[in-house]
Image 1 (tube, rainbow, N blue to C red):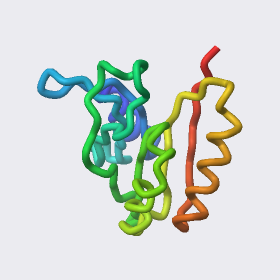
Image 2: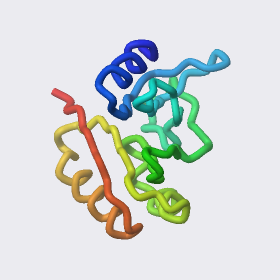
Image 3: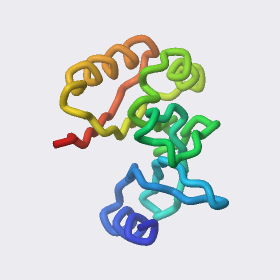
Length: 136
């Protein structure tokens, strides 16, 4: 997958943030990669706050997902991480201008989470890009 993302980012001259299951040191993580327009991985973020039962196979991450895009401080967090205001404030304190939030909505909570993302952006003075896969 990394090769495909790298090639596409270079070919289209775009920055890509993509979610994946990342296996490191025999531990699985719910992760997101940021790939630069040069095809380089600029950030490899592991979701911090996992959904009980649904994500028991994953190990939580410990670091913020920070990267630069054309001298703009970017951040990435995944889905449920947005539930924790103190955690998202850490992105604000790191001068993140834009936070990407790949997510998986469960239809019953899609409205709630769309509003929560707006609120977290206002609280921390940053823009959000949120993409959500819907559970059918």
